[in-house]
Image 1 (cartoon, rainbow, N blue to C red):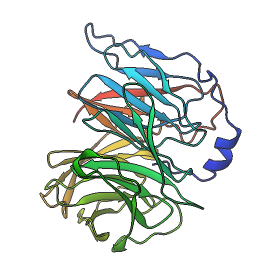
Image 2 (image 1 turned 90 degrees about the vertical axis):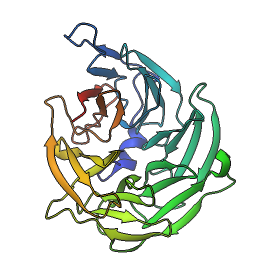
Image 3 (image 1 turned 30 degrees about the vertical axis):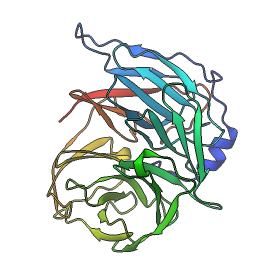
Image 4 (image 1 turned 120 degrees about the vertical axis):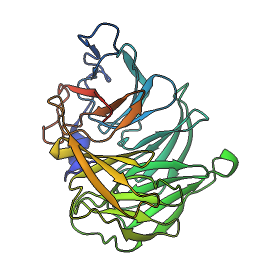
Length: 309
């Protein structure tokens, strides 16, 4: 989900300030009785992915060392609950069994973590050599993972919910062509649940992807999702984060996800290159990745909440 070059060099030089520990917690919401609208993360954390389940807790991954921060949305308070392996944690998804699926970016891997204890349940090496394992979506029988460097999807079959021995590499064919820069990024199901939607960051294209890997460009009627990052689907409404534009595009789709119209874009003065989005109640939560700010061990980071459009 990140869209800058030279990530590997940056990651190799950074150490999180709090083992990971700068100041973190809530920024007060002036409206009494409301959960905080901004959550302070540890200094140097470099947030990217976020996942929220049915309980009021957000899981936020670090690009710096792969640690996972768990925040209570009611208070904004939180802590590191799973230490990273030293490689990034990018896209995150939480299933109903309390398992957190974590895309490993340049590490080329996928990890599955117990969301209650932080214990590593399984690890899958999806790619060797150059890779950028980026985002994840969970369907009823599989986890699907994008790679922004290699024109493939990775399928992790979850038959009866069981974790498999290995993932399956599925080449992408059809309209989605990889070029220079970051390619396939955010991923979500189509409204009818029969396919997947993937945004291509460098071109702004949105594509319907079949389980076979065949891709078809979604008709956006002249619009583009340039700098497209995390995707979130609610009914037929797609929320597409456009990170460096500091905006969330609200797209109305048809049932099959082959046609969409951008209804509006939402921004907020607190946005600082948000990477992705998750929902809880009537709010959207977005971690500010700050891709245009040189990261240091003392760089402050936040996740912000906005009303769901």
